Image (cartoon, rainbow, N blue to C red; front, side, top):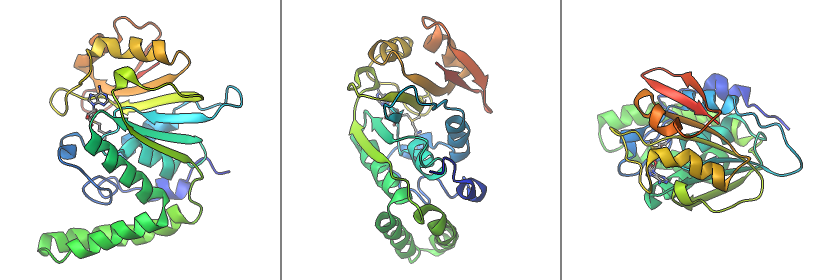
Length: 238
Ligand SMILES: C[S@@+](CC[C@H](N)C(=O)[O-])C[C@H]1O[C@@H](n2cnc3c(N)ncnc32)[C@H](O)[C@@H]1O
């Protein structure tokens, strides 16, 4: 089993492998577009060494359009047995599920390509952009579809403060809502890590947040590690 799809990583163009371009978007998703390169950086560092025979579960509980789980499937096939995308917004969940299918199901990939081809007739700008996306998809197709990951995919609508129990080694990876992009619903930020810790005591968590939000997020949770990213963002690891 390959754990890294190096060809995908080499070929990755984050301006095209993005929602609203190769991937689908939903109303509001443009405000919190997440970079595939940052997703790669986060996923690479997840310590997925098996702690027994339980399935390794990657779970993005704030999935939006699903960039993090999509990159997990495309770049790290076999690193996780199960990939779960959840969000409090049902439109986000439907969009993320569509995007997960695009990266690992050849019929969904072909349907997206056909949709982009059709959109090219709308105006000159769409034609230019569509041509670039189509050319990139032609390059990616053999890289993604020759040995698609045999991973179980799950997508569900859910509040991150009240996630359902699962059996397996859970690794949460997410881009948290930021004040100027999207709002955290369901509870205060200060309660997020304690509530995940109490429901999933063995889970790891890797969350991107803003420097301003770190103190609120971490103040009552010991053992948190911080790493700076560009643009005032911080990775919080538990
Ligand atoms: C910054 S966006 C995530 C963007 C995502 N990485 C992407 O690729 O599109 C944050 C998401 O958190 C969701 N959200 C806000 N509060 C939530 C909660 N309590 N539980 C689950 N999702 C929540 C929003 O609906 C939004 O989609």
